Amino acid sequence: MLARALLVLAAALILTPLALAAGGPDPGVLQAGSGIAGANGAVRFVTLQAGSVTTLEAIATNGGGILNTALIRGGWGIPLVDFNGSVGGLSTNGRTLVLGPTGFGTCKPDGCSPLRRATSFQVVNPKTLRHRATVTLRGDYAFDALSPNGQRLYLIHHLSAANLDKYVVRAYDLTRHRLLPGAIADRTQRGWLMQGMPMARATSADGRYAYTLYANPGGYPFVHALDTVAGHAHCIGIPWTNVQSQGDLDLLKLGADGRQLSVGRINGPIAGRRMYFNVDTHSYRITPIKAAPDSGFPWWTLSLLALAFPAAVVVVARKRSQHAIPQSKPEIQAWPRSASSG
Image 1: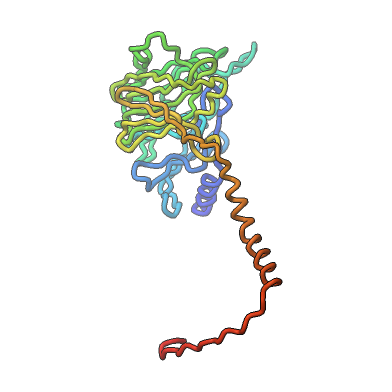
Image 2 (image 1 turned 120 degrees about the horizontal axis):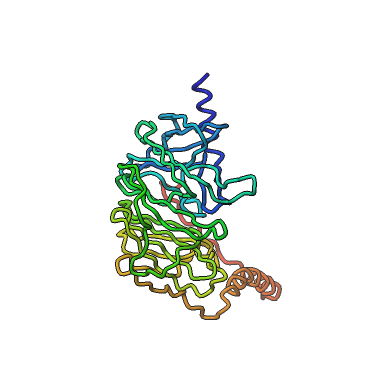
């Protein structure tokens, strides 16, 4: 009976993805669906809340069998790192899994605020699904990234209920269990205002660098390049001239060698993906990607000609047959069939 219930739960996890708290100041968390994959892709970690308890499952990618299960009191999910549905929370070495809270906002007798008064995260051992620690901080925080060894947790600290796009990046030491002083900021651009909405994420293969594309209302979009090992960041302003539609930029693609980062949009002006800028991740130099030139020739007319040509041939052939001069019937030559022919 228990095994059957677990199978039903596993099916629910896979078939019913839920993005929770997506209407708040951050993308929220993911429950059910595909969850987050382990380093080798053989296991996926999925959460589902039922009442006041969250079930964390380790599910085999091949076959969908449940490998391990843990129950965690409260509402938790796999952290979303952008509004396109990219997930995070699992360290590259596969030894640390961080779960984010499902709820957001705080209500008092005098009114409600979209920001939490306090935020907690659950730290789990992915190998055993055993609870390792609970991180609780005063204020509203969202998951941002993990260092490859899982020892440093990076968080988005929302500062203003009046401006939900305003934030700072903080670091938390998971080995010493303390919030590190100061914000993770671009030291070369002290006047840079950190605000915006995370639209896309790209991460280096070793997990060290996390690149996040932000839409910045009233300004230019930018890429926040975070070095999760050294603990510093760089902001790369994107010269997107149409600031009214900067939310159209929602795609990041990192090259195999990690040297080139391409910025674009998922639904291009014609169809499919379209890249607009290349960013050198070493020098931060931005190079616009030129679109293929438009010759102005109406190529669509060729398709109409292609459709009309067979019909025209038939008409001409019929007219010729009606006015054709009778010819003598040609002799039909019979070719000898070989012994192997059917």
